[in-house]
Image (cartoon, rainbow, N blue to C red; front, side, top):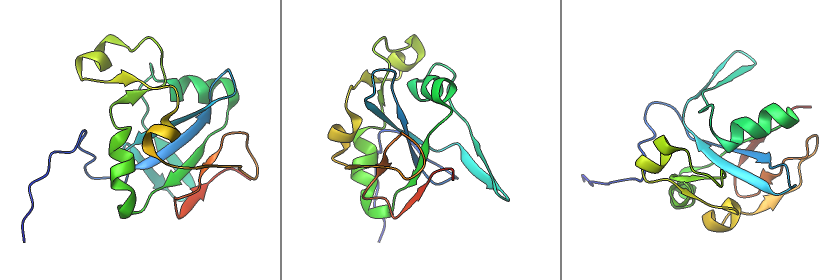
Length: 132
């Protein structure tokens, strides 16, 4: 059976990872990232330099990599074109992005306390990677 789909963003070639970080006001940010791969024990992440996620990682040095299963595709798509930046960068605005303060709520995913970092994990993700 063939099914045509039109996802909000095409995540092609690499798995989607939900990167959770902490904003400067202590609230959580959650970003779907598809530019991610592993080389041995090192993870390479391609982030937009204007993203809230990038700013948060630079400021705190922390994040959690949450690997969603296929049954979370709807939750991922709900935040595909969102940004934690209050002033949406022009290039993202042109692509249809909108600001969302609480992406956990929008995606209907649950924050879970992490073991070794301040950023939360995504409870529904079967794999949650945080530094030890």
